[in-house]
Image (cartoon, rainbow, N blue to C red; front, side, top):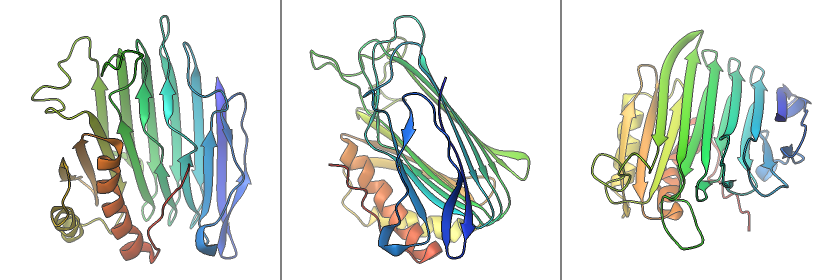
Length: 271
């Protein structure tokens, strides 16, 4: 198994610093940087190998102490190549202590022809912490330009708050056995996105304002916002391009950063 951090972060003075970083194998992490001289640490995860291949297993362990704030993203898309024998597996374990904030904004997942990918994320939160995460699934790629030629993309997220499970999100796309493009699945769209947010400020009134903000924009996609049993929500987006889905996420994320944390919008330029 290839491992990327144990990013164990804590607050020091007015900044979040890495208390412990460890990685092994092809999965690596770059040095931290701070946007607009902010206190929040930002890291890029990278895979120098260019993508994931048959039998790869990756693990990621993120631990934030009290008041620590971390923005985590990837250097490029998660590319899953042909897996004739064993699917690629990625295990993500996240621990957020009271008052901490994690914004996890990876690039899209691209399943190449005959690929299989399973992603399992388990989040343990203390009361008063904040978790903001996105996932975008593309229609994949093959040399003949066919869509949905991958075999399986399986994404599962569990969120625990103060030791109790409060959200279970499971997306399983299997073009061999499902009519992905039809009604009941992607409804004629090609790209699928999920934003999961848990935090005390994500109450009913805030979710209503988010919904109104999205409706006020000329969005070339479908979206739906559902509240969780605790303060938080799940946002689903169907679009015809990565940019369509990202635009919806950017609207919501910008409002969250401004109203909750007094921070400006971000643009994580990677090209």
